[in-house]
Image 1 (cartoon, rainbow, N blue to C red):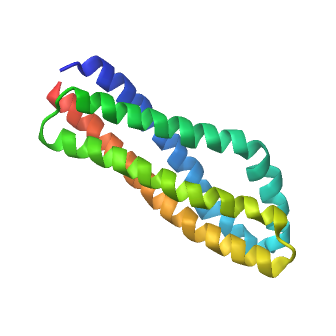
Image 2 (image 1 turned 180 degrees about the vertical axis):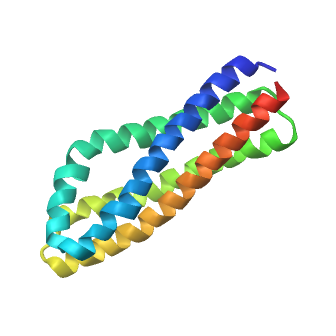
Length: 159
C-alpha cells in the first residue's frame, strides 16, 4: 500500500473540508439568521457586497478546490486496495462530496437570484429557500469532514 501519497492528499482533504465547514457554519449560524434582525433589504445589501463580491472567489476556491482534493484523496485511497472500514470511509467521503456539490449547484443560483429581487417579499422567499439549501449543504459538509477524518484514521491504522 502506498500510504505516503494517500496520507498526504487525505490530510489536505481533511484540512480543506475543515475550512469549508467553518465558513459554512459561519454563514449558517451567524450570517443568515441576522436577516431577521436587520431586515432582508439590509441583509441583501451585505450579502451582495460580501458573498456575491469577494465571496465568489473565496467560496469557489474552497468548494471546488476542496471538493476536487477530496475526490482525489478518495480515488488515490481506493487505488491502494484498502480493506474494510477504510474502504467504507473513502466511499462515504466521495459520495458526500458529490452530494454537497449537487446541493451547491442549486444553492448558488438561489443566492445569486437576490440581485433580481424586486421587493422584500421576493428577498424573503429567496433567503428562506437559500437557508434550507444551506442547511442541507452544512449537514453534508460536516458529514464529509467526518468521513474524511475517519478515512484518515483508517489509513493511518492500515499503514
